[in-house]
Figure (cartoon, helix red, strand yellow):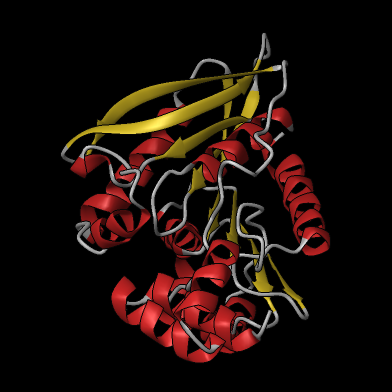
Length: 283
């Protein structure tokens, strides 16, 4: 697919561009409304067609835990009948806790960890079915309370009797930026993995105690612009980190419900690197 189309969709999903204006611009690029409507399903997340993850060794359930200002909703996934496990918070993209991120949470559990997929939109009643509404609500979150909700999620995991007290985070897009924020704000964190997420501020990097792993798509110019300053700050402050840039792939390359942006080879390699880090730091 024309990279201009993918870039336009990326702008739509990460800015205040409304759907009406997005469709107008898509029609211009594709040569008409009819073609735009043909291309649209290839751009949007298709949860029905994605293979839903299932593993009989994994138990998953909906839970709540006390947040900064009310109960926080989450999906908890864990291996059956196992204890002394490392724990991982899974952080969704900017549309909320959707079926794809719930699958990722279960996949983390299948690797031998207690995984908590937190719904950042809990203050609004949880993630809505309408993804555009989810994007709108993400922009209305109180940043400080949202951060506290994630920090409290990490404390919830550390206090579980089936856990070993060690914690990591993995986040995607908006969640990748949050993973970097948690690395800055939680000195007890062992590992933080950010997929194509906004970088932490250079002046905040000295606070990072966790091992950091950063995954980026080579075509993701918007996010990648922040890599040099972040990497230099990580080096200067002797943070244990790794940066991986997957050439020729787009933002959201890990999302297998997004057919035009998903890249199987890059997703599998990034996933293996991520799990290897967690097994090293959280076991």
